[in-house]
Picture 1: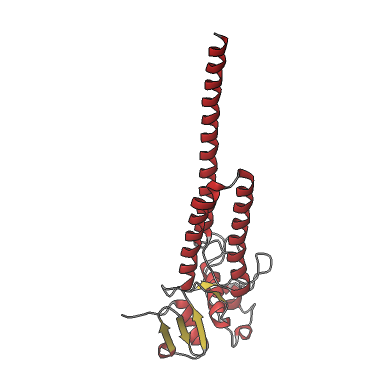
Picture 2: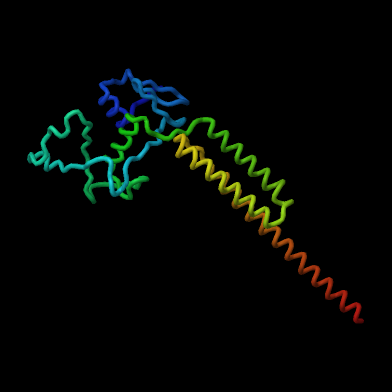
Length: 225
């Protein structure tokens, strides 16, 4: 099997004076580029970090015309990585990123290259899959065994607490460890499952009250007769 480096990886390697022989693929772990260790998912995809914000972009975009006419001196780019691409509005497809609503492809490439060189990225380790499966199992057990035996108020409180815990774990791992553990589906299962069980309990209770009212009316009628 042959692995081909992406454009961003090739740019990062060239900036470090490294060649294809210096790129080592470690299946299940990531990629080693010289002394850099790049964490990827099982498909060797990188979850890049994005720098700056929309009001304070991390990368400066200069006009190629200004460079050609001498308004910007070439010395400005000495010992720097220079990426050439369209950034003007209408110059091509733009994409939404965590820091920009409309980002040109060359700008996204700049973020990815910088993410590789600085070793800033989010990882999705293999064990995160088993954490997600465990969360699914615990949520299913809670819905089947605990919710039907609890009153509506306490059950709603416990469910909300578990939802907040799952969200806090996912966001906390992202912020503190740069590790992505996808707990969205277990959270959705919990919310939808609780809503279904609560609705079912309400309908059953309402049906029982209707039957009781009918039986009560018949008893009163028989007593009157």
